Length: 318
Image (cartoon, rainbow, N blue to C red; front, side, top):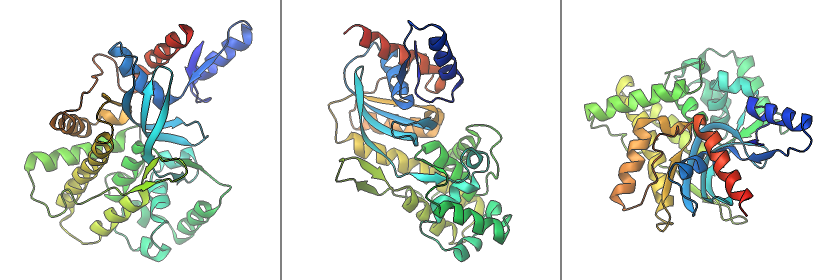
């Protein structure tokens, strides 16, 4: 019996209950984002090492935090993490996903004072009372509170709040869809904005592990600094959404350039964003990187079961 490592997913609970009732059946678990990469490998009947980019909403990582920006060297036997975004706290846990202003604040508290944050032209922040803002800051500082996350999907949530595109999430991926729509408007209109391509993602190398961490907090400091210029709001929204997506694609390509010998895999729900996926595929082609296509396999969670099966088949064949 094989399932996701996340204990709260319905299939994981079902698998655990089944194994408890059938003592001869053992439960095998596969990390969520690794499964995304495996699903595309299965679609191509591929077993060798790939350079996988698994960008997602949330999924339990091996360290107990929530992952979702994983770059990994992966084959059917396992994976090694090469890069991810720096973690940020989900203030209030799952409540932060429904009220993504909490995600934005967790990113901003690292660089801005409460007084500076209070003055920002962001509707979701303006609707908070001084007491609410202070309490959220106290929770952010409390090391015993909240769970840490490094999800690209949650960064899209924070951007949508910062640009006044959303205040609450009605469904998973809503913020990402709004950001994608704004980015597409910018691209279609060919707006010659002074902000286009101006966002950069700073890599930080962890000397103890060799893993590259892309600085989430610094990225949002750049976004806020740009918002505070007071430029035309609709044009600014479109340009920043486009620049945000391009910055993620550029950081991904920069990492891929270090491993030209491996085919690339782009998987996970965030790659349903056509602007991001198209840009990554275009840059890969321009730099002569082989890409394994997903074919008819969903790149969101609809493909997880296939990825888990592809892993299990090759463990059992040893």
